[in-house]
Length: 525
Image 1 (cartoon, rainbow, N blue to C red):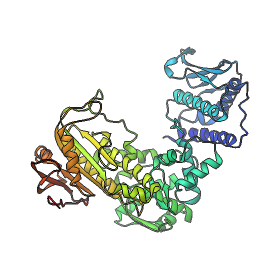
Image 2 (cartoon, rainbow, N blue to C red):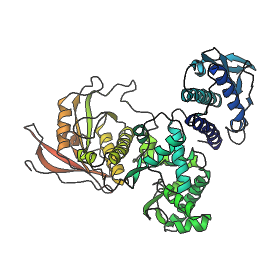
Image 3 (tube, rainbow, N blue to C red):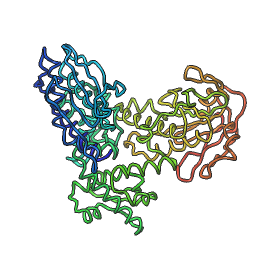
Image 4 (tube, rainbow, N blue to C red):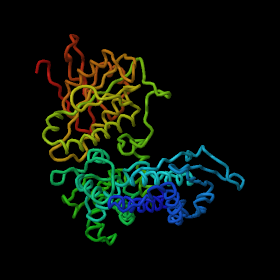
């Protein structure tokens, strides 16, 4: 997100937060009986307040034209070549969009702004949400940008960012939710908010949450720490050239950081595995050191967060292990171009978390956060390798996915295990996942598969242990001569799958850099 857009986004969220505080304090006046008039007046006032950040939204070299008109009966607010007119219809406000063609405004419903906004007899919170929804959609259409404000997640991300900036650590879910509910009017439950973030470990029995570099960059008040992060990338490149480590002492000396700044920088570098690896750090990151990543040389010309993100995306989308936070934002792959699932000879991947039921009973709150991260990692690996996540199938917390090509299924399983094993799980939630891959004939019906191959894959998965990928003989027969050079399929002998008489040769997937389990119990053990 370019700096001008970040600035505009921050200006909008600052106004939004002020109004949410007023609602929380029961001081926001919606003009009972005159809601439509108040709505239009507030909208016009906000565009006027945001004139400067709107003008600067396109960054250096382009000043956006803004014509704000405070008159409720006037022509409406104009930004660039788009104008929106809000009409008072008593119990509702009618929004109409116009685009300038040849210097004259022409109605343009294709912009998606035309709608009737019912605001009579609503509470203050729905009133505000409609007000800002109208503002954001108008500005996005007029500026042709994405402000990433479509859902309420932005508010919780800003609370997380504020806590991180002030304290040098990520907040716990409890701290996040309590701060949000005590300061702002919100609609989301604790469970809903807990599902918005990945786990960053456990602090005093509560799950800590964090933001990715790109999400943190979009929040207000984070520019100084983003600048330090970019400068640290330069130091990491230099350390790589010198075949040395990058330490907090180096950062303090070279970047003139104070103690809190160095602590925050260490935590941000921990989120950038393509820049730094082999972390050694105190629990509170008061001191830390990293080895430069093998990929750090790709970042030697990076000058902005956008350039860093683009470089990281390019590395991961072409070389395998794809972070799920990136993949989750990409277009979901659904088999054929028309959205149909593959038929005929397909390859299934089934996974399951070992001993998940017991872990849920021991600590539900921590397991909830861990499983949210588990789901993101698996979905990211599967979709990045052209697979389709179908649904849960089997015992415990399981995944069921289908692939056109068995080589893609193997790559997805390996990427998923690598991501799961490198994840910093809470000490008492060390998730271990077992996986099985089987190729066979099956036809899709109602977005599902019902075929003997599905049953055999589930039975093969039962023979696996945590941190293991079992592969069927049918899959092996197809991929044996076209397997990636870094993968090996090792035969462990014939095994009888539960409920089946025929013995089947079973293989385990092995990789030099991923410590996968290699042993498979004999029949009857």
